[in-house]
Amino acid sequence: MIANLSFDDFASQMAFDLRLHTGEWTHESRLIGDLGLDSLQMVELLVLMYDIGAPLPDGILGEHTTAGDLYFHYRSHTDARA
Image 1 (spheres, rainbow, N blue to C red):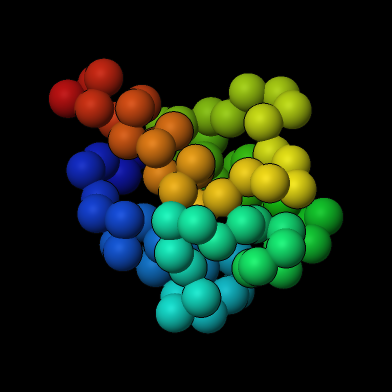
Image 2: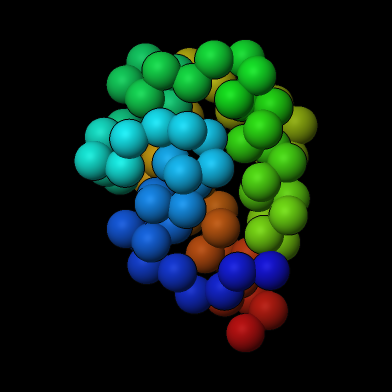
């Protein structure tokens, strides 16, 4: 598990793993609309979040899910284990 990353570090890690540009990530960036994640990248994102100890519940990823939502979910899981 990767613990206690800042938003910028979290965004950099996710962008690298999903092959996206880091500069595009803000708290308000929508995964599908702004960052342009396709269906394969959404599946990869599910796996990445699981691998870092913050598995996403079914149905959480949608058109309006933001990078900030993911980061909040990540921090709520990593803070609970700290």
